[in-house]
Length: 352
Picture 1 (cartoon, rainbow, N blue to C red):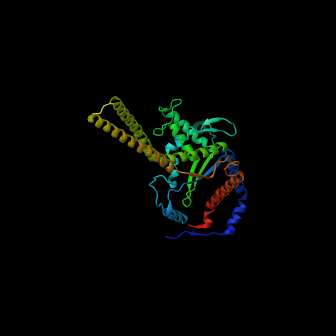
Picture 2 (cartoon, rainbow, N blue to C red; picture 1 turned 180 degrees about the horizontal axis):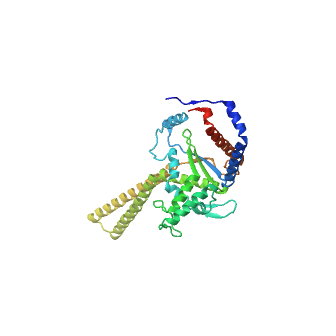
Picture 3 (cartoon, rainbow, N blue to C red; picture 1 turned 90 degrees about the vertical axis):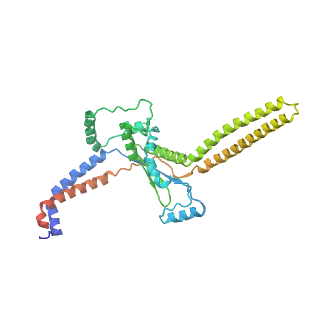
């Protein structure tokens, strides 16, 4: 079987392009016009960035080892206190349905119109469509006409349930996921949150809100056990206080009713009630001390976040410039025509 041989002659290719320069120009111009038209038909996007530095959970010698390991890109979490949530999984946390649904009721204000909405309403009802979206929207409209209507819609004022979203809520959550991103630097653990939106003020507002939501979510997790312990101790405090008050009243009532009694049996009963009252008081006092320690533990477990870069309203859009788009599409037109020429004249370059 003969091998295929490719003969490339640069001068011949150049001459071929020269002879076909008019059509190449037409292809490039038409392609450039299409590209610019699509660029003008695509809504502008604005990007706002927030950077956070979370509190390190390692301490002492083990914390120093972890810091040295992170400098060379290693992830060695010595001496941690068993947290299941650490910076590396913050992006997964932000993509969770619970977190996304928590962003639905955020109040935002459009920069250009000065109108206020809930973020869910803004994403689902007030987004500009790109030219390239209309074919799919038309196909979706036809499918919706054929398919039966959705029955599990929310009533007015009813909150979204992350466990069971409606179709509209699911689509809106999907759009929100596409608009936000979270990156974590493995060496420094710095968290970078980026929000993209068609409105610069909304992009900055949402970036700041996501930062706050993330801090609340991490704080809630980190302090969950300590808060549960505190709640349990407060219940014990209420019970111990009630038992102490009942014991104190029983002792006082017995002592007052037997004030002038010298019988030994009455004194033994009084001592018994006094000892029971003192015991209940000691238990109550110990629980009070434990509550103070539990409150301190909650504060100790509350993580601290340093805002390296706060949210700000972007002044320029993040879309590719029109000039760059024009050049890219004109090059695409050139390569399309070049490919056609090579295919038509393949016998000059391929020994088949």
